[in-house]
Image (cartoon, rainbow, N blue to C red; front, side):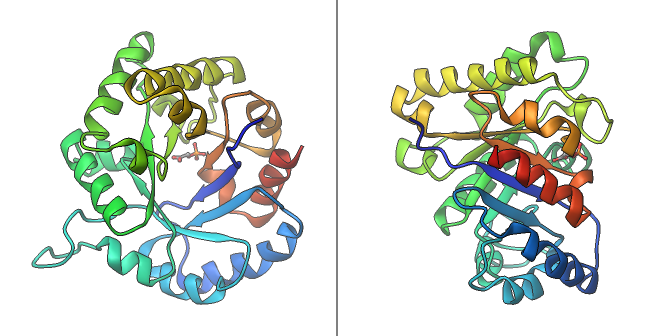
Length: 252
Ligand code: PGA
């Protein structure tokens, strides 16, 4: 028996205006009838959040943000705080997505601060970790380092609010997916790390997603793995039809 509810999350990255977001939501909602225990989440750009929050009130589709600033407020031009995101209706926030790490300079110290800022304001962080192609042989070391540094100061109670997304960087936006077996192996390794640094109950209770070129065609076999609790989807989440098919794969 698992207490972990599947989560299918669509990370839109830098795509869609507020109007395009509204059109997507209107098309997606009827396709989600009867999703039951599966949580479905869209993560649009900041500029679409306020309108999305209004449209999604009382609906079975959750809202998340792609990033946050670790300070609550102040002279941080361009920054968006956790409280601002929560006020738009966000329940989740991505922290440490590989594009933030690689293109915007979010190192593990910053990721840890963002994670704690999200937790302090009751947003549920989705902590993204994963290795590059050249690090693939050393995946355990990379993942262990990220978990150790990113979860600095996070106790067991706070961990229960965190979803982890394992995203091999070589599989993001490349069309190359980790095989279900490789994804399963790495995700079970993450669970073992949690067991040894927290406890077995925490390891079994933590929701861990796979991300990296998830498509309707490969979603069923990925989601069938015992330790994979859902998917963080980029490209295939931009079209309501293909995103809904991935949600359907989680129903099986
Ligand atoms: P992709 O992106 O599905 O387009 O590979 C995944 C992600 O970056 O979260």
